[in-house]
Length: 93
Figure (tube, rainbow, N blue to C red):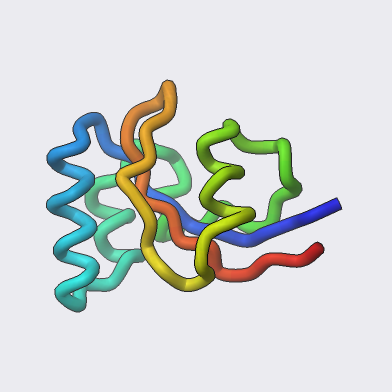
């Protein structure tokens, strides 16, 4: 079964998500942005979700985590919880 490690941050609006992505692209650390702004409990760990298997997260997460380029911040990704920035840090088949 496929597994991956990733980090994310969660905010309420697409606008805020885009603003935070721009800050990361301009050199701010993902971990620092997640700690300050993420509404997910994982924010306290810099957005680290640890390792998980395909199918454990919502489908919108899996689509990015198991298909998109590694070590690139993707998003905004909309789910029922809000808007996410996602970065897959490793993946195993």
